[in-house]
Image (cartoon, rainbow, N blue to C red; front, side, top):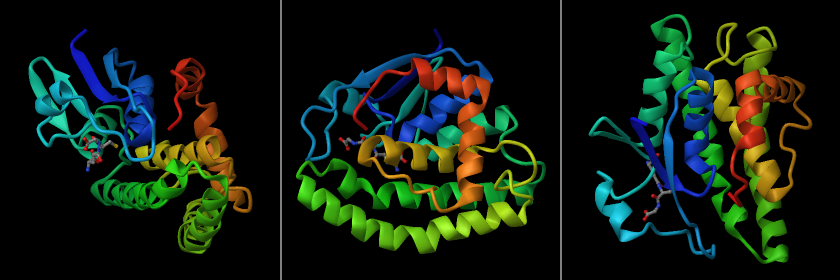
Length: 210
Ligand SMILES: N[C@@H](CCC(=O)N[C@@H](CS)C(=O)NCC(=O)O)C(=O)O
């Protein structure tokens, strides 16, 4: 297999790439480093860290060449599989919504890794207050003003995939349904999760904590 994908045994920042690979029918070998006891955030085995250009995963090796940084990797394949809109402006809007989704993902890390149930509940409340108005309401508005189905244009983009991953991942890890009060976001996520190749990937993907 010519594609070797290095990450933790986790969905994390890398799951959108796996979904894009599913859509494009890309075959790849996965090297999943164990996450161990979290918190603290996991560290990579030295032999993996030393291979990675920036000392971090995800990293992809393709025929001896390396590509790192989750969004650069995903954008490269999103372009190949027509998930970047139909012109440069749409591609830029898609980048904007990917960045905003990644911001939400990163804001929630403290709640995701907290094991103490009382502290976790406090963090969930605090993060809901910070996320719902600023991001969920805005995403809902953007989808509605674009016809109610997609973030940009009228076909699936990697921004739709990112937003869906963030909402779905928080439901798996923290048991919260962030899209519940946002019908357009909820409907977009349901559509992405029902996309046959993505649905099939989710059904067969390894079960992991994060
Ligand atoms: N900006 C990078 C961040 C990568 C990153 O934070 N990777 C974490 C896992 S999600 C990592 O490799 N942690 C282990 C370490 O730093 O040793 C990206 O988006 O790819």
